[in-house]
Every structure is written in structure tokens, then in C-alpha cells.
Image (cartoon, rainbow, N blue to C red):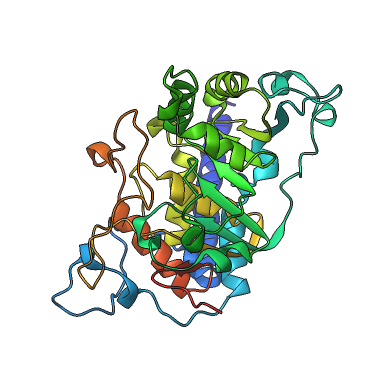
Length: 355
């Protein structure tokens, strides 16, 4: 009896092992054969052939590495969108009204988890768009004359409450969504309570985008609400992350790293920037995504010095880019460059055509 049971158990283990081996092999074959962006690989560095002169270093990568001709590749874009499906905004975030627009039957953001979805704003309030612009804050935008082009898209997203007024010619006027990281939410709260109101750069920026969408980390709700209460009559649509997956916490961002590693075909272990995370997330709601201001280097190929941001910083404390080397900026730039080549989304560097 025992011998029979042992034999049966061994047989089941062997069968299970064979099944797992087959599934792993089959899955790998499907990934590598049908999806060139999802190759399983353990190489540490992205293998991209740069079309550049031998005297140009990675820090000098600029327009020579970004093809000026670009064609949208729907098949490639759909593959990336499918790989990023777990980041779909309408599923990953609670939706609520903030500020003076709060009405009966609408749920305040801090209570969103306690109230049924139907009592809040529609979960699909962001919608789906044919064309989108994600405007980074890179100094490469200065003198670009990209403002009219940016404003021509169906949906415009920005990050970390940048200064727009005075730079409209280069960065556009419109803002439909602003993504805030935890550091910006903290700065926002500190600024709202400054006695010297002339030092608060954020109130005017918020008023300029009133009525738009603010996408924030769930841990930043208190800071944001405190600032809005201090500012008074302002209203926004708030999206707060249901999980930690969207934002950059070292021990809880495996989801982002797995997605980007899958798309790139090689392992990515560094802490993703807010820019990288936002790009991948916006692909779930945007058919054709255009990136502006995504350039992390200090000089272009003409050796022109480029400021980190196109606008001056706030007076609280300086923003130190990539502090402690937590981010792999070159890897991310190469990642965007490769997806540009594949027709997934388009990177815009340098001057835009003025009609």
C-alpha cells in the first residue's frame, strides 16, 4: 500500500515537473517568436547599436541616436500596451473629486477606499485617446518652439507641477493630467504654509491647471489635501494609486521592473524614474504617444550646456538629479530610444517645425 502510494506520488511529481518545464518552454517560445519586445534574457545591459561617431560618448547621445523619420507601428505599440496592462489607469487608481467641486454623492479622495465605486466619479474618467503628449521637464525643451505642436494633441500630461507660464512657446499651454511623485507632494504642502507667500511657486501653477487630473501616490493624499485646503477655492479630479506598484519604492516596484524588463528583453533592476513609469502607463490609454523633454544629459551633440529643468527650481531646497545613483538614466534613455525606433511612441528632441 505504502509502496503504491510512494510510486503514485513520485509519478505525480515527475508529471508536474514535466508540465512546468513544458509550460516554461512553450511560454518562452511564444514570447521570443511572436513578441520581439518580450525576449527573456538575463544580460545586464541593453544591447543597442548606436549610430554614432566613435568619439561621441554615451553622455553625448542626442539626435544622432534618434531617427528623425518615424512611423507608428500599431503591432509593436499593442504588444507594449498588452505587456503594461496591469498599469491601466482606470483599474489601478481610485477616482474622486478634490476641492470646491465636492458635491453630495461624490467621494472625497481620503474616503475613496471606503465608498463603493459607483458613488465616486466614473472610473473611466481619463478615457482613451488617439494622440497624447507627455511633456518632461528637461532643459532640452528651451528654444524648441514645440508649444503649438504639444497643444495640438488630444491629451497632454505633465509631471511634478512644472512652470508653464512664460514657456508656452516651447512647452505648450494645455494640461489635462499632472503626475506627482511623493517629493513634489511634500514640497507642495510645505509651500502652501509658507508665511512669505512670494516664495510659494506652486499655488499659481495649481490655479493654472484647475479642473484637470492630479495623479498621486496614495501616501501623498494627506499632503495634497492639506495644501488644497490652505489654498482654498481650487478643484481637481484626483487619482490615487490603489497599490504601491505605480510609484518608485525600492521594495515594491517589482511590477514596473518586470514590465520594462519584459519589453526591453533584458533585466532592469534599478529604481525606475517617474518619467519611465508614466510613459509605460500612458501607453495603456494613448494610441500614439509623443514624448517631449526626455533628455537626461548635460550637453547635446553641439556641446551646448543644458539645464536639468527648463524652468528654475523652487526656493525650498535644490532638486538633486538621480541622488545616490538610484536611477539608471542612460538605460532609460536607451529604452525610450529603442521603442522610438520600433514605432511604439515618438521621442521629440531639438526644435519643432513652426507652421
